[in-house]
Each structure stands twice: as C-alpha cells, then as structure tokens.
Length: 192
Image 1 (tube, rainbow, N blue to C red):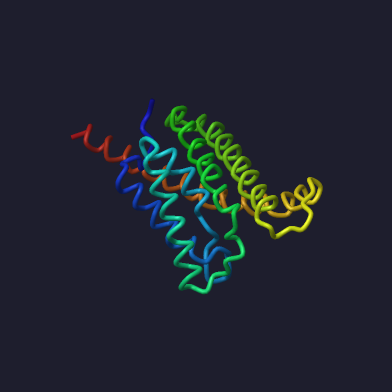
Image 2: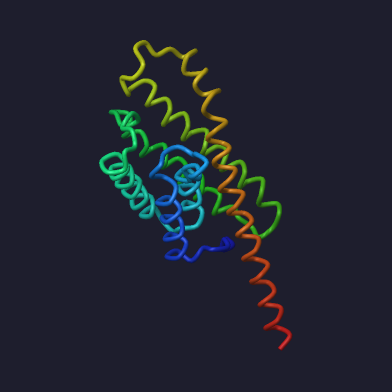
C-alpha cells in the first residue's frame, strides 16, 4: 500500500475539520459562502486518516456545527427531524468509500479511476440514505411516493455531485502539488 499525499493524520484531520467548520455552518452556497464541503470531508477523511475513530469525531463536529448554526446563527432547522440520524450511515458510506480507495491508491494516474469510482459510489449511497430518510421519515412530505422521490433525486443529486467535484478536484490539485514538491526535494537531496 502506498501512502497518500497529505496522509499525516493530525494535520490532515485538522485541515478537513477546518474545511467543514468554514463551509457547513451556512448549509447553502451563496455568492458569499462556499458550498458545504462535509460530504467531501468525510470521503477524504476515510482516504487520509487511519482507522474509524476520525469518523466519530467528524460526526460529532458536524452535529455541533449544526446545533450552533441553528441555535445561534439563524440557520433554519427545517432539515432537523427524526431523519437526521440517517446522516450517521450516510456519512459512514462516504468514509467507507474513502477507506476503500486508500487501500487501492497508487502514486500514478491509474489511481484516478478507482478514486472517481469510490467518490461516485460513496456520494450516491450518501444521497440515497440521507435524502431517502429525509423524504420518508422527516414528516415534511404528506404522502411520499417513489416517483416523487425519484424527481427529488434528479433535482438534488447533481448539486451534490457538483459540490463533491469541486472539493475533490481541489484535493487532487493539492495532492499533485505536494507530490511534485516532494519529488523535487527528493531529487535535489539525491543530487547533493
């Protein structure tokens, strides 16, 4: 198994937590705020951090951010319902997809296909679990139907994919820069 760039657990974990803190509290993107990075954070944490403990820490952080945003930040509590508990397996699916990818990572372009496949699979499962639970268990929809849920998926899933693509694309660029800088330093050290 090859080490992923930025795979020093403490700095990587703190960076991911800071990204979630900076983007989650608004819940919606606007001209003044970036879209919520939580889904990408859970996927990247699974890929970069060891074991399953970081998942519990990030779940706790997400819940605290939501509480503070609603209680003190004026964010609507519309999404908080009995379905909120489904975020645990939904985010767990993203984390598991990241862990799956980490075991297959190679420092080569051929790693992009498993990366994209894991990210897409994790995102799809997260969307189905989180949106499905909200649609069925939130009490916000009088008579849920599969057809109506399908329409909602078609409407909202592309937005989730856009957010994931934004943050995972940025992560790939950062990883490429880290690899390039590391390779340049290694070459400079070898030539001395």
